[in-house]
Length: 232
Image 1 (tube, rainbow, N blue to C red):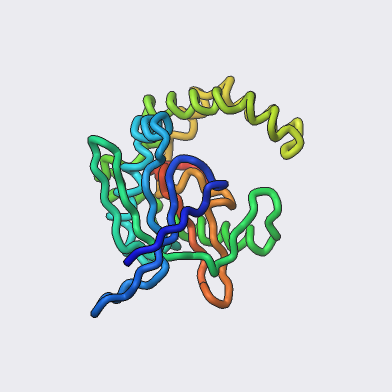
Image 2 (cartoon, rainbow, N blue to C red):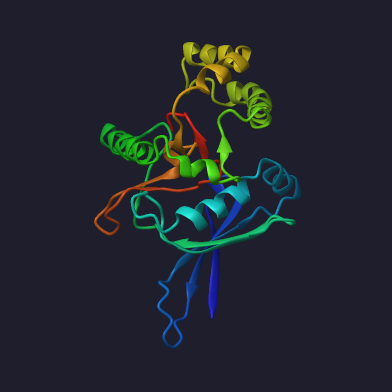
């Protein structure tokens, strides 16, 4: 028997998360509860995710790297996708007992922990030619992908300034404007040199921090992994 409770609605609408409690039967060694991740129920969101390849990338990432213990990942028990429809299922451990970070209200110690783990990821895969063989992995010098990200940022920047104007300084907003204005020059300049595995969206909302119950740092939501240069 299963009981499902939807969680994480405030986290975003790109996917649906459910806490699933499983009644143990026979030799079933699965922990309970687990987290089940499904595609969004909103058609436009699903279509956008399919176009950007985010569902496919996350499933493929966990299929390839999910058992890599050098990476700070949640324990993954299942990950698969139907590419034509975008239907997918990821089954992972429940991290309710870990410390959840906040975007603009995080202590310095947590920031230092996060930076150390990100540095370890980058060092582990720095210049790794094995990443070049993963066709689904984002590419820092992919012109089409770059144009997609620029279009997305262009679309979101105006509403973000309206909704979050006080969260960043005027200088920070001007940096984002300058980035957009010089997008192609920045892309070319940063496409040189060694690449590594990057999360690409590694802000504090994608992180769990150690507690007595969960004694490790965890980085999740690998929907946009890159073979690239990004600092996160």
